[in-house]
Image 1: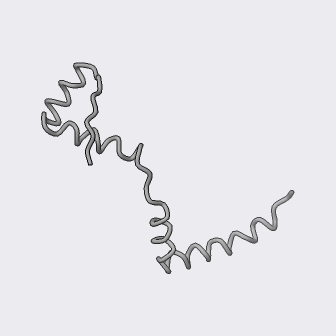
Image 2: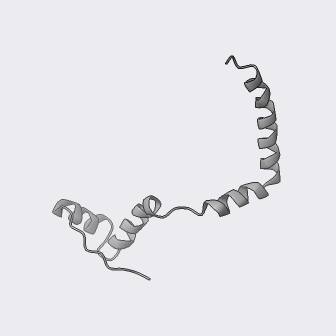
Length: 76
């Protein structure tokens, strides 16, 4: 579902958008610019996909095991 939004911008910015982006494409352009700032990614799905990657998980496990010894040698 789409919602209509009225915004106020500087005339110079509007003219630039109109000339460069095009009169019927401004809304889509602005929407794609704003989307990453207001829509959270589905982190659960991303983490599940990462966990399903067995070679990545094996590499992460090796790295974690290799660094455990580093912590034991740290001066407290």
